[in-house]
Amino acid sequence: MSLKDITYTEKKDTRSGFGEGIYEAGLKNPNVVTLCADLVGSLKLGKFIEAFPDRFIQTGIAEANMMGVAAGLAVAGKIPVPTTFANFGTSRVYDQVRQSIAYSNKNVKIACSHAGLTLGEDGATHQTLEDIGMMKMLPGMTVVVPADYNQTRLATIAVIEKEGPCYLRFGRPSWPIFTPKEDSTFQIGKAQFLSQGTDVTIIACGHMVWQAVEAGKELEEQGISVELINMHTIKPLDEEAILKSVGKTGCVVTAEEHQYNGGLGESVARVLSQNAPVPQEFVAVKDTFGESGTPTQLLDKYGLAPKDIVAAVKKVISRK
Image (cartoon, rainbow, N blue to C red):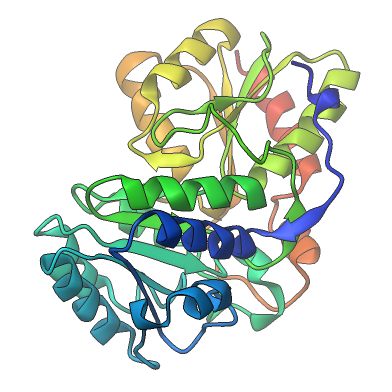
């Protein structure tokens, strides 16, 4: 498939994909219970709560307590889904997640919205750019970062069905919907190839997948053959897909809405260093906090625009 064939007709926030997915998961499984730290509207839980009012717990602004309650519900055989902003569901409660959930491998699904720079005007204190690294380091924790509304819906259903602790990361801004509503290829731990190419591999996650699509179209117009991988699962990482791709292209660019320390790029670099060392460039936030602004303004300022991916591709090809 050529990237020029990937288009969209609608934009929608990925958090709404979670809202639809958790409702569908609740219909399928009566053990699904949601919890929220006073952010019901932001997490799009209205439909779930209306359908299953007795399976929702409002903990208030007490995120650490919410994780403890979730751990207890898991012990009782429920599938708890604590929800809040990504900053509050990771760094604010890391001790509780580590000790009460990850250490004992409890079946808790931590679902967090408003991640990354695209949170926008709320500013640096809310724009978590460290969460992927924090969560992937916890033994046994699955980390999923879907690319659009449709994929977030499917990812939500999938993490509910997967046994063990999971972290699901999504966002606030309206974003292009470009993956199929019913996608039989979506599977936790299995990367999606959006295009086949021979000159460079681009591996992206979350909102940066669309940025990579846009960059890839420009590169194709310039005669550069791009293999684009949507790495929606950061852990477990699809190492086979990475090695298969770089075996053809000989170089890779990773793109993520996260610090370049600790995120997707470092996970890919580990795989390459151990198996197939090739040139790699990182498109990510470079060891800084964000600031207030629109999502597009911030992605552009912090080097996460399509033009930055294009520049990274040209640089990495020159290093082959």
